[in-house]
Amino acid sequence: MSFSIPQSFVDQFSANVLLLSEQRMSRLMPTVQQEDVTGESFARERIGMTKDVASVTTDRHGDTPLDNTPHTRRWGFIQDYDVADLIDRQDRIRLLIDPQSSYTIKHAGTMGRTMDDEIIRAMRGSAATGRDGAGSQALPAGQKIPHGGTGMTLAKLIQAKEILDANEVDPMIPRYMALNARGISQLLEDEKLTSADYNTVRALQRGTLDEFMSFTFIRLERLPNDGSGNTFALAYTSLATVMGIAARPSTIVAPRPDKRMAQQLYTWGTWGAVRVEDEMVVEVAYDDPSTGS
Image (cartoon, rainbow, N blue to C red; front, side, top):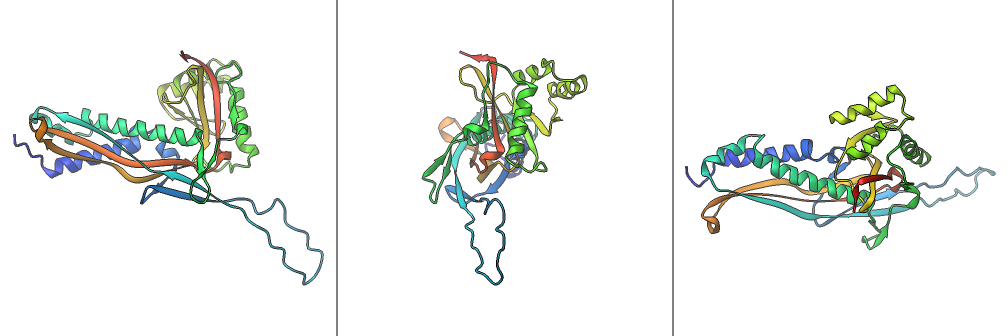
């Protein structure tokens, strides 16, 4: 077979990687805002509350009171990512057009997991603030539920919902709860759950997304832990975080002369995320012995 690959093969492979990374491999991307970005950074403007209540009018034709509506800014910074493979056997090139190709799944999975890691970092970490991004805003302590020596429980779900509600987060905005398999198992073992609720949560073990207490559950094994037996779940809304995308995953397939003309599959992308609403993210710590040192 010729060392050259028909362009249609290259285009199809690239399309498959994009499809899988957005819809199949990244579990968090569909749950956050996405924004096309040009450049190395992007800003999201935030408008706060003008005042708690309106002023009482006590005179006629008096001066109009002027109130100062606070404006703040959050910054996201773009980073390049890539992954590459070599194909030694030329007779396997045609397999690249198969959406289930092991190469396609491998590259898409890498891109998707990397996207999820960036979203998790943005939700839990400090957000760049200020006119030029020189400031920093950590996730407030009031948005964190300590593990308290217990695993994931119904009480913690209720507390996470209470925090969002107390922050006046619009209940019409989709809410999500990302937790790992151990956290789901702990919920199944919670005696406070009724039999009907048990059946709802039990469906999570089949890999489906189910709603419970206004949250759509997402099983995610990449959630961070502190190395001493505590894992951090995330309760959040679809408006809490923005993923800025300068370049969606794209693939180049070309021969490598320095590798005896083996075909190289090179997939790359450029993106970065930022948390724009602290009030819409709740970190839930729970005891997870499987992550202990």
